[in-house]
Length: 417
Image (cartoon, rainbow, N blue to C red):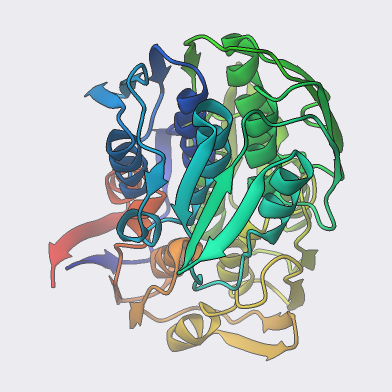
């Protein structure tokens, strides 16, 4: 197992390029099931979750080839309707194959994804939507078994905004008979990117990026070529890396408008952010100001940036309150940040962070993907040496982050434990 060794206290400077979005790539890969033929997806990041998705697709009968950051997926021979527990258990997004398999093959058998370190993310809204579209659904021995000769359009109102549920039902509806209306739909940019892929296949979709999406089903879809959007969470992590080290970093390949909520909060904290010729420059102040945040569905402050922002607030001037409104167990990084000498008190879904003059390096352990990033950020700002273990979480969502940070002047290296 690998770990990261960080010698902190160095101001980051230079240029870095953001990789393609993990959270956009996964449903895009799954959507290729809907359209027999050879799809070409570019700007794909090299990540564990991408490899897992490829294994799922190959199990279903697809042929997948990669060349650099370009992946070609031939779904002409998809004929297996089952995704087993052995694959689905390693990545929750695997359950998204259910709707596309059902829409294309008329049947699907997919393992339930199980629990998650940052809280329960049940798929009941996914199943409720598919049932409304005429699917016959049964839960047996930990598997979802679904059948439908052809799904039918329906009006579906989500009880809560769900990114996975919106993506799942939008894909299923693309081949359904009639019109499907998704109300209280999630508005994340990744959903807009998926809609662009489906539209390129021949789907008829209106309203992606709003809370009401209309999909008029078509009889068949064709293969597509698409460039995946940049990873806004990776971009946000580099922005905080510049801020927490008092650095000066230029970020290429990001779309700043996808991070408006984070940008506003960073500017409130005294961080200077400029955008010229699609290059975002981030300069950290001499002293960070304390800022309160509340995580919300997009376009609110992203839950996937909460842990990283908390690391920044650990060295802010004053106290800040960070409220987590999306996942119930997403403060597991707090116990590890305390090992750096941070002053954090949790009460319910809120954490009060009192800034300290400096953090001190420590051995810490990652508990989930974004927690991993927060510990790296704290290590970059801390005195002395930090060791981050269990970084296999990190490899699920960040492409060679230690190499990119080293390119900005960080003293960071990956070693075998």
